[in-house]
Image 1 (cartoon, rainbow, N blue to C red):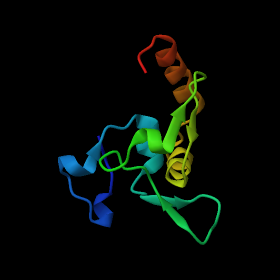
Image 2: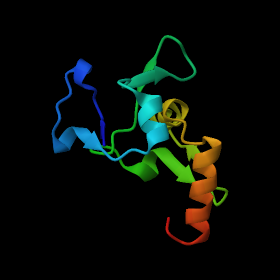
Image 3: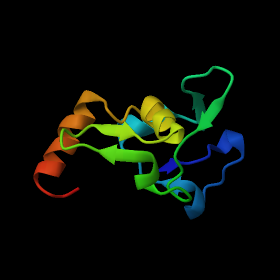
Length: 100
């Protein structure tokens, strides 16, 4: 489990602020809530599974790679390292087995 908004940013340990996260995503995110994507003047928040719709921000390819469809998606992919080689291998196998 990971805090969507970290405790140091005022997030609470309650269902509405918790999300399942693999160890790679959890460690990569830390207490971050946003990042810069293309423009160092504009900060972009991460995907929030409690308020955002996955399909609005990401596409999953048969290769196991996740592609951004929005700036929120790009920020999330960048920091949570969605396309880490181990994650792609695991995801590709899940796609092959029809589990995702």
